[in-house]
Amino acid sequence: MKRKPGTSRKRRPRGGVPGREQRPFQSLINHLTPGEIKRVARELHERQVRLRLRNEELRRAQADLARARDQLSDLYEFAPVGYLTLDPQATILQANRTAAELLGVRRGSIVGRKLTRFIAPEGREALRRHQQGMSESGARKTSELLLKREDGRVFPAQVETVRTREGTPGNAHCRCVISDITARKAAEEAARLGEEHYRLLADHTNDIVGLNDCEGRCLYLSPSFFRKTGWMPEEVVGVRWRAHVHPEDLTAVDRASRARGRAAAASTVEHRIRCRDGTWIWVETSFKTVRGHDGSPWRQLLWSHDITEIKRLKLEIADAGEREQQRIGAELHDDLCQRLATLKLRAELLASRLETLQAEDAPAARQIWRQISEATKVARGIAKGLSPIDEHPEGLMNALSEMVATVEAMHEVPCFFHCPQPVLVQNRSAAAHLFRIAQELMNNAARHAKPHRVDMRVLANAGHVRIEVENDGSGFRKPTRNGKGMGVRIMKTRADAIGATLQFLPRPCGKSGTLAVCEVAQSVCNPAPPAALRRKGILRPEQHG
Picture 1 (cartoon, rainbow, N blue to C red):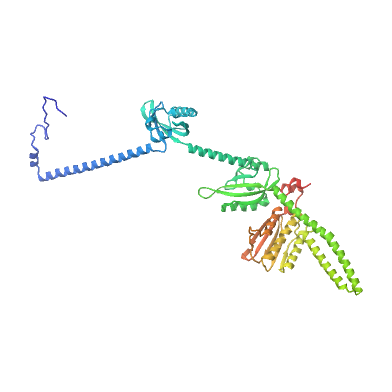
Picture 2: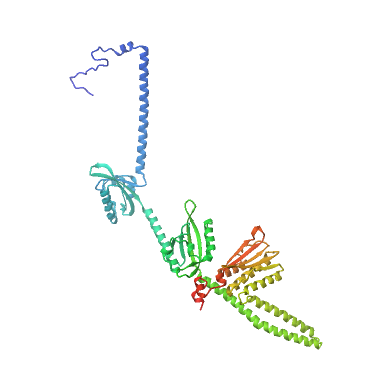
C-alpha cells in the first residue's frame, strides 16, 4: 500500500518484550546455544514439510474439484433428458443441450423464452393442471404433456417439476426434467392393440381358451365356454378344471396335465366336460405350461375344440360301415350260400346218378360237387367274417373265441383265449368296433411279432370292459408317416368312435413282447336309456327317435 506524501513510515518492533532494548538478529543467534539452534532449525524444517504437504493436498483437492465440475457439467449437458430452470412465470433461466435439442432450438436462444411457447395447444390444459398441482402441494409433480418443437412437430413428453431454494421467498425457481416418451407411447399403443386383438380373438373364437394357475384352478375362460356349457363366470372361475371333466376321463386328463409340466410342447387329450343342464360335450383339450423367470411353472394355458359333432359323425360312419358289412354278410348267407347249397345238393344227386349208371362223366361230376362244397364253405366264412357277432349280449365273447381259433389255424401260432367270467355287451355297434380292434391286434401279433404264443384276455368290471392281447415276440414299433401303419390308425379311429382307449405297452417284468390294451366304459357297452346316454354325451338329441 502506498503511503501518503509527507508522512513517515512507522517502524514496528521486531520482537521482544516492550520496554526492553531490541537486539539485532545476529546478536540473537550468537546468544543461542548449539542445541537451541538445532531445535529451531528442526522446527522450521517440520513447518516447511507440513506447509509443502498442505499445498500438495490443496492442489489435489483443486484438481479433484475441477474434474468433478467437468463431470457434472458433462452429465448436465449431455444427459439423456432435458433440464430446465424456470422462474415462477415459466421463463427459462437455464437449459442444457438436450433440452435445446428436444425443443428444436439453439441453446443460446432458449434462455429467456417462455416454456408455454413450446406447449402444443392441446396440451395447455394439462400444463395448467400441472402448475396448479405444483402451487397447491409444493411437492414433486410429474405429468405427461404435448410439447411443440420450433419446427412445429408435436411429441409427447414426461415433465417432472420440483421447487428449489433459489430465488426470493414466495418467488422460488423450479427445475424441470423433460423426457421424450414417443417410443414408450408407441410401445404402449402397440401393446394395447395387441391386447385388443387377442381379446377379440378370445371373445369371438368358437374354441375354448382358458388360463389356469399351477394348481389347475381356472383364472380365465373365453366366452365360448359359457356359450357351450351354460355356466356363469362366477360359477367357474376359481374352480379346478378337472371338476368339469367326466369321471371316466379324469385319468387321461390328469396324465396330460402332468405331462405338460415336464415337456415344453403342448399335450392333447380328448375328454368330456359337463354342461350346466347335466349333459356332456366332447372336447379336444391341449395343455401348455407357461414358466416364470426362474423356470418354474407359473401358469397353464388350455384351449379346447368342441369335437362332439366329429365324434357323432365318426360313430355314424363306422356304424354305417358295419351295417353295410352286416348287410352284405346277410345277403351272402341268405342268398348266395343258399343258392350254393341247392347247387351242391343237385351236384351230389347228379354225381350219384352218374356213378349208378357207371357213366364216363361220373368222376367229373363228383369233382364238381366237391368244388361247390368248398365254395359254399368259403362263402359262409366270408359271410361270417362280415357279420361275426350274434345279436345276443354274449355275441362278442363268442365271436372273439372263434376268431382266436381262426387266427391260430391261419398263422400256425399257438393262440389262447381267456375269459374268466361272462362279458356281456348289448351295444352292437360297440361290440363290432371292439371285435375289429381285437381282430387287428391278433392278426398283427401273429403276423409281425413272430411270437411263440399269443394270449387274449377279455375282462370286465363295474366301470369298464377291457381286452388285452399279449405276445412274447418282438416289441411294438410305432407307425411311420410314409403310409405304413394303416391298421393302427384304423384301430385308433374305431376306439375314438366309441370313446375307448388303446395303448401299446411293454410286457411286465422286462419280458420281451407287447401288451396291447383296449378299454371302454360300461356305459358305452351296456347303455342306459336314451336320456341317460344324452347326459353322458354319447348320443345327441337327434340320434334317438
